[in-house]
Structure formats: structure tokens, C-alpha cells
Amino acid sequence: MFFQIEDLLALFLCYLIGSIPFGLVFSKLFGKTDPRISGSKNIGATNVLRIHGKLLGIITLIFDILKAFLPLLLVENYNNQILIPCALTIFLGHIFPVWLKFKGGKGIAVLIGILIIYSAFYAVTFLLCWLITFMIFRYSSLAAIVSSILLVCLAIVFSESYEQYSILFLSFIVFFKHRENILRLINGKEEKIFF
Image (cartoon, rainbow, N blue to C red; front, side, top):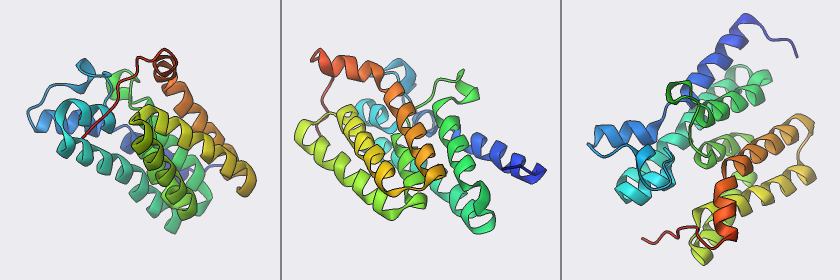
């Protein structure tokens, strides 16, 4: 694939959109503490929910999903050829935001936004798996890991090459970002979430 100048601009804009740290932004707007210094010290929706409550957690979740879904919806309608590269740059923007010294979220909400565009089947299956695992065990991290493993299996069975490779890459990054959670789960030190 050869990228035109406008394609490169779209990729750059997608990275910038993905890098907007909504967990930090809404914490500041609502006069709350920086999520990077409390809880798991992460800007994602789970940590914002844990330290600032359901309202801010849900708002962060929605905006993190939308920052992937809305740009990709535009890309899908106007230049479907760069859909997957744009999805990857949005995701990498969230994980490695330039504004926060490349220390961003763990990617689950943004991954959901991407999956909605890729395949409603993937998105619904991922969400159901996440919800069921979470309701049984009360670990957000475990729910993310189990759902991502299921997503990899689905991609291997049902996806074509480029989409399959992108899902495998996204899932690998999710596992990488949850490596500390995995160690805490193994050691029985991971914090459960109750509403």
C-alpha cells in the first residue's frame, strides 16, 4: 500500500485524536485529582471509575470509545483503503500519547470503538465476554484479558489477512499493557471492583 499526502495527514490526525487523554481531561474539568497519581495511576476509564466514581468513569469510557468510532466512521465512508492503518494509529495514540510522555491508557475502550467499525459481531462478542467475566470475578483486568484472548481466536477463524493481523497486533498491545495486572492476578493482589 502506498500512502498519499492526504492519507498521511489522516493518519497523523487519527494519532492526535487517539492521544486525547479524556480520563485526565474530565478529571481536571470536574476538579478531581490527577488519575495518574491515584489507584492504578492510569488515565483509563477503569481507574477513573475507581477513584472518582461511576459518572466520571462512564463519561471517560464513552468518550474513549467515541474517539475511535467517530473518526473511523468517517474514514470508512470516505477512504476505506486506510481504515486499518487509521485504527492502528488511533489505538497507538491512546496507548502512547505524546502529551503524557507516551504513558497512556490500556486500550480496551478504544478497542471497542475500533471493533464496532470492524464488525458488530466482534464488538458484541467482546463486550459480552467482558461483562460476563467481570460480573463473575469482579476484575476489570481479567475481563479485558479473557475478552482479548477470545477476540484473537475469532480473528484467526473469521478475519481476512489485514484485519486479522491488526486484531492480533491490538490484542498483543492489550496484553503488554496489562502485564502488571497479570502478575497481580497471579499473586492474588489485583483489586476487585464493586459498585
